[in-house]
Image (cartoon, rainbow, N blue to C red; front, side, top):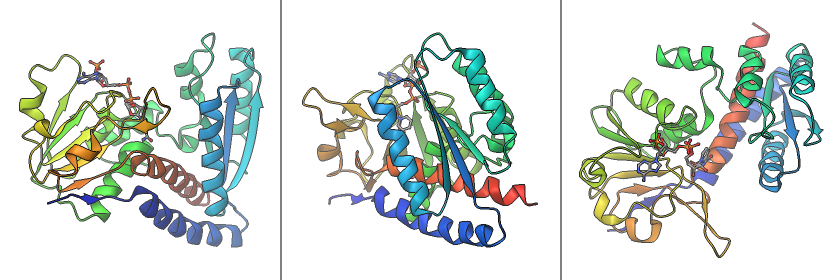
Length: 283
Ligand code: NDP
């Protein structure tokens, strides 16, 4: 039997509609949620991401403040821009679009964003809060993945969740969120031996490795929920995930497509974080 296809675009629209209601209430009280995006340089892929975030902001009634800086902007200048946004009461969330030019230390920039405006959830204090089970602003891709599971009726508690990838922005926080929801979690990475033996045990398999179509049907358990975070570009220009979607969907219980799965949810969760930061700013 073919898997249920988890429609990330539709679920993201629901999330944005819910956020629009809260944003409207905040606007009525004179506190319209605001997102500031800092884009350095002219990377075309970054410009596409920024436009999609701005579109989602408009859809949810969130104001945007755009700063586009030339590629040769110095680290010190960029820090000044971050400081100014940290001090601007109209701005509730700050996003610095990655990647930054090589001469800029991304960690230093990201950690300069005020913890209460860190809508990407990358600040070490926000990550620490997640570790302790009290996230205020959680990383958007893993939290979006959790919503996809929940709204698709995938049971999590007591299940074996296998996370492929251990980055600080996807794999590790996803593992923590699954653990918090009482899954038994295994985290795999490039040094894991006999990966298929582990992935075949997964009731939930979250793939965030950046290897096109690496996960085939022989690597999954029948009926498993497959969350494909990977975004890879094939030589013909098309996008694909880490999972061989067409083959795996015949064996899985649930599966997210790429595009149209986790990607739109990541954007929706940025907006949800901006709205929640705005709400907290009013006490
Ligand atoms: P990173 O490159 O930071 O991490 C990749 C992880 O995959 C590493 O932990 C690496 O292991 C592991 N890995 C690499 N190759 C293998 C392998 N053959 N077997 C097992 N593990 C492997 O990537 P990100 O976490 O930033 O992103 C992962 C993917 O998700 C990318 O395709 C990215 O484009 C996509 N992405 C999608 C988003 C969305 O909104 N849908 C948002 C963010 C990312 P090790 O640690 O040992 O090197």
